[in-house]
Figure 1 (cartoon, rainbow, N blue to C red):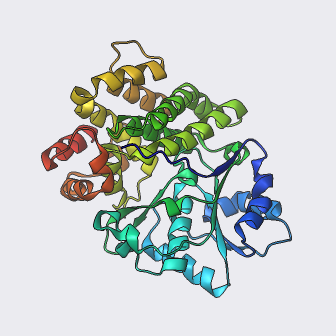
Figure 2 (tube, rainbow, N blue to C red; figure 1 turned 120 degrees about the vertical axis):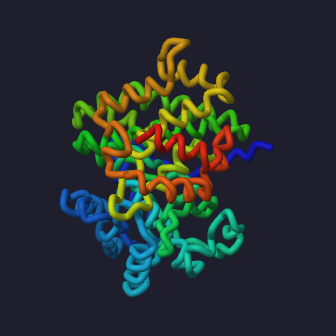
Length: 375
């Protein structure tokens, strides 16, 4: 049976930030916690958002979101949320800030610890309520502003995916203006994150033709416009298209994700490195496309069409070529991942929720082979 869920109110255009006060009022939020990071404070984006919110509200700012959000950071933000009497959240930033904001929204109304909400153990049934949340992305990658999930590194070291329709923000405000001037490497990494979402969601076996159509449309946009966005941070058309690719990727992965994300989540928990999620996705994607090919030939035809490739093109080679063109690291070793990391990566990839969505079931040996291929 297909379950078709689409999804939340999304304001999408240059200047969409002006809708934030209206959405705060609609959500009944009077004192929002702005969940963000220190980098966005430093470059003035938080100041821009505070100005857009205006004088009718009393926001406070938590800027301690780490690159891979942790349960410790969630607890700190929750302490501030409670101490300052906040009644809702504006998640401002990339996927890390949005994931942290969702976790705070969950704990603020349903209590902790986070681990009890593990979806693989039926934890979604324990959710009572979630605080109202509005998402404002500042990168074009994660799509968390319209998704049912979030990912947090727990205190026990697991990088866990949480999923529930209750985690979908009440509104998503997608203003490409907030991504203008994003540095080339961050543009490349977040862009490949979005492209990976489109590809992996499309390959999930669960039947959902509308999601498949959205995935292919997002892939077309990302494949055409990512090189332009990386080359010229002021290309407004490319920034618009990449933000749409990101949003569509997350709309599509209502179906689920696959082995790329299982391994990226496993690698993302290596704290000495704190590797960027989108970069990991880009590096793992060629190996996974080779692994899945024997069970996905019909779908690979449609992927090639969406990407404008020749009918006999090798998809894995095409992704590797794009990675090289836009400056993605050549492999995991360049990112600091070592032979000694592989066993733990295999263990945590196999435990990850995304592993269940891969169209071809991966054994421990398969995961190890794909990791080694990606080194």
